[in-house]
Length: 209
Picture 1 (tube, helix red, strand yellow):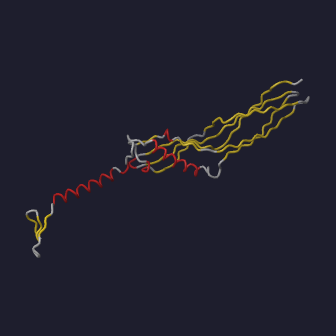
Picture 2 (cartoon, helix red, strand yellow):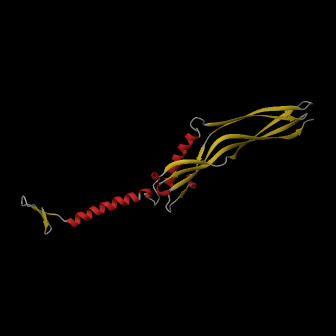
Picture 3 (cartoon, one colour):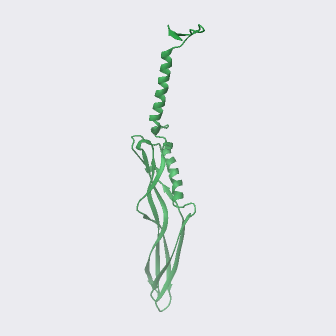
């Protein structure tokens, strides 16, 4: 077989046909370039709105920071002593509250790129983090927090005291980390309710004579 004048010629059967070699080569070169470009841009696939694709990130780990206490509620109870002697008032205080996990995707940060995720992209990763936290902190099986405490205070003769009870929720804050390609990673803050704490004090109210 020979190629002359822009055509192939078969010496055996005498047939000939044309083929534009430059076009074939150009077509192959374009396909190779397209595939290389797809590989290079895989880690920064944009989504409508100019952000990165949240599907390019994978949950990596949870980083805990020191626990905090947050005010929850105040109770007041009055105890009276109508006798001529000092008595001790004992109260059993109890409270149960539903546990919650808070994922603040609006304060999420992305590192390793000038690009960013859309609000919807951060929210999508936030949902993934919330599911991970529910498993890690057993929120599916321990859906409430309960604390019971016995409080005792002396009441002088013919007087009253007011017990002021301050409940606090102990929370575990931290960062949920997601990793992407080429060093990209996203940090999302969170808080999980872990326990209840009770502070109390007894205040003298009035004398009774």
